[in-house]
Length: 114
Length: 113
Image (cartoon, rainbow over all chains, first blue to last red):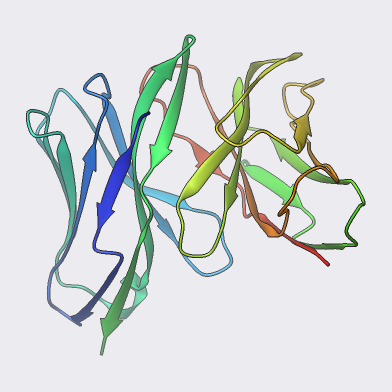
């Protein structure tokens, strides 16, 4: 079935350094790739997304890149700050029976060390 | 204040009891979803609905039931048939447009003992 693999499962970086999280997906028809940030005990919040007609998207310190040929996409966070510490999830869209669904990666726990 | 609300935030039940989790949205979204989240794992889809009075099973629907009598509401019942019901439950909604963002509620943590 459809699958999204996310790596690494945990990531620890020094404040001010960059963090990169990578995902691969299996369904070549996927065309929408959101990233969510989840703080402890809360629901996930959408932080950035990318659609298959572009290769890169930036929003201040956050960027996402997409390689459709290789079926992988990545989240880049620059100049990391303590408030970036959270669990991050990638997802890829699939369409079944006329409905669009998201398949999620397993999550990456990002810790920013002061 | 627009968004998705889930209640209660914490829920405790004895084994063998059914329990219903509430999800309400005022975003005028047609589609609603229920996910289950276990520690260290991603989100797994339980049920979803694209229109009132219609819903489909997700990847882990066994032991759960839903209803969609109103566009704004999509309650989830965790039945006694669900073998491992303790988890964090998340509700989401979106429009029906291709590539539409899903917005999540704050979640309900269910503990069954």
